[in-house]
Structures are given as C-alpha cells and as structure tokens.
Length: 252
Ligand SMILES: NC(=O)c1ccc[n+]([C@@H]2O[C@H](COP(=O)([O-])OP(=O)(O)OC[C@H]3O[C@@H](n4cnc5c(N)ncnc54)[C@H](O)[C@@H]3O)[C@@H](O)[C@H]2O)c1
Image (cartoon, rainbow, N blue to C red; front, side, top):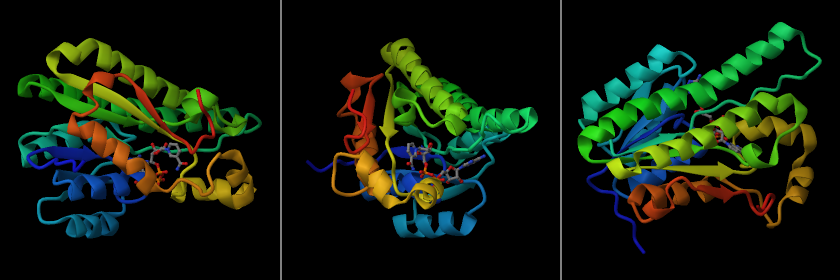
C-alpha cells in the first residue's frame, strides 16, 4: 500500500538528525509538506530540507524554553497556514547519577522534564487549539521503551518523562477524539543515533545486540514508517495506543 500524505503538513521537532530526520524524510517522501524543527544544527536541517524538496522549511527553537515552544508553533502556522500532524520527537537522555550533588541531579530532572514532557505538552495544547478550528488533526509523540520497561538508575528522569508523555498522549486521545483529534505514542527501544552512541561506547555493541531479539540494531529508518502510517489516518481507530518498535527487547 502506498501512503499519500500530499495536501498535509507536518511539524517534526528535533528533525536535524536521528529519528526526527528519518521521520521528516519519510513524511516528505510520502508527499507531506514538512516543517523541520532544529535547535542548533541549522546546516543539517537546511540540507535535509533541500533533500526533501522546495516545500520543506526549517524552524529554530530551544524547546527547554516555554516561550520558544509557543513561538515555534506560531511560526509554523504563520508559514503553513494549516498543520495536520504534530510529531513531538525532540528529546534528551541526560545521565544523572543518584550520587551526584543534589543541585546537579535536580538540574538533570528540570532539563529532562522541560524538553521531554513540558515542551510536547505546550505544543500539544497549541496543536489541539489549532486542530479544533480545522476539524481535527493528529499528534504523534515519540516516547520510549523506558516508559514501560524502566531504565538504568542514572536515567530515572528520562524514564519518568517518557512515562508522563505516554499518559499525556492517552489523555488527549480520550479527551479530544470526538473533535477529530487523534493521539499516538511510538516507543522506540535502543536505536542507533547520536543519543544512543554514548551508551554504545560505554557498554559495546555486543551488549546491546544481546538485549534484542533480532539480528541487527534498530535504525531510525525502522521507526519512521510507523509515524508515516499513523499520520495517514489509517491507524485512527487505535488512538491512544503505543506502537513498540524495540526489536523484541521488551514485549508486553
Ligand atoms: N535512540 C534511542 O535509542 C531512543 C530510544 C527510545 C526513544 N528515543 C527517543 O527518540 C527521540 C529522538 O531521539 P534520537 O535518538 O534521534 O536522538 P538525537 O539526540 O539524535 O536527537 C534528539 C533531537 O532532539 C533535539 N533536542 C534536544 N534538546 C533540545 C532542545 N532543548 N530544544 C530543541 N531540540 C532539542 C536535538 O537537537 C535532536 O535533534 C527522543 O525523544 C528520544 O528520547 C530514542
């Protein structure tokens, strides 16, 4: 089945690299007009926009700052007129050991919650308001296996933020379905990106490979098709669901 997203427009946060870049590319290949959000890799974001084609555009924002989340949404709506799908992909996985100084540990929590949970919540709120004037729309939040399986002790904040994102998504799905607003989680397991590289360097590829049921590690391109599918409307009756893409490392 060929998915056709022409006449739709999509905002993908954190799209200059990793999973976000693969999602933006796949959306563009399916015909969507793509807003590529980035924080500080303008060159990479612009190169991706050029690859996708003339209709893609880049937008800058530091999503740890609430006012920049709002400004990002307003800028995209001002340029595109209408947004059909919001993909909250940007995220951080900060290591914050229990043994570290309290203020450092708290700083890790604050940044993690601001980027991984508060920013998606702000964008969801603005998207819901916009979708209500448009007859509907879709939200796809990139959560994590960590929300369900848990994570290592230095990543308590990360797991908690992703668990919060799952609950946020489910609540939106239940609260706004009648308004034509659908909300989904995609929960990757270990995926080969810059975010995962530190873990790979520390534990080695064999350790990670031993954790999964398949023969190779998950790549960003293994995640993107699910996001395109959900953006297409074909999955609307599973609103509120989470799609696990973790190579069989946590089956529940
Ligand atoms: N790689 C994995 O193993 C894995 C597993 C589960 C979930 N995820 C999730 O997938 C998503 C994408 O991660 P990735 O693996 O591609 O990592 P990545 O580090 O390559 O990409 C993260 C993106 O988020 C952006 N970002 C981070 N902080 C930001 C801020 N303050 N303001 C604006 N943008 C900011 C970065 O610029 C980057 O583009 C994240 O939400 C991550 O938690 C990744």
